[in-house]
Image (cartoon, rainbow, N blue to C red; front, side):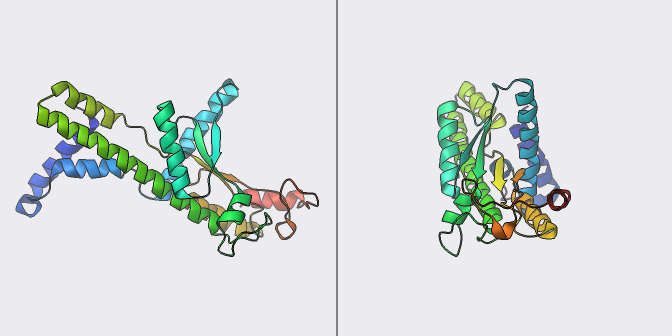
Length: 242
């Protein structure tokens, strides 16, 4: 029996235990809602995508031709449409990531309005965008799985056993739009404690990879500009350890 069918069976057994109070609950509807809401807190996403990234890094170390691609985005809808398009044309999201750059956050997502890449945007801008992206990517999953459920219902209504089994297999082997996000936290926006708090918030939002610069945050310049001032090694190591 498939995982989807196992879930229906488990909910049906639970329904029997609760008697008439659960009479209106359809076990298959519950199984479908579970399938469409696989990921809950952002930390669960961060753990899931971290495993993907570690596997991809190990494969790249073994063979540099097996590389990943990280696509920049600045809005949940943009990220969603990129992953939907990738999956539609390549039939997989394997080794495709999303990337949040500091300059893009400053220019397009700061509540202060468009800003230069000098760490002047709000600390919360990046984790808020990470949360937004994963909300849209989960929505893409729910939408696509909804189509699979319709195909399953149509096959059942037509008495098409082969089509029904094909739909169940597609549900069981569904590939999510949830991919790793690499997020730029600039220079940590302060001392090691501020760096720790921002990194914690980003991981809780779902980021599995964080990029941090060794520039002095108050004097930060875009990587393409002159005049960059770096912090002493011990200060940067304190941020990494934090």
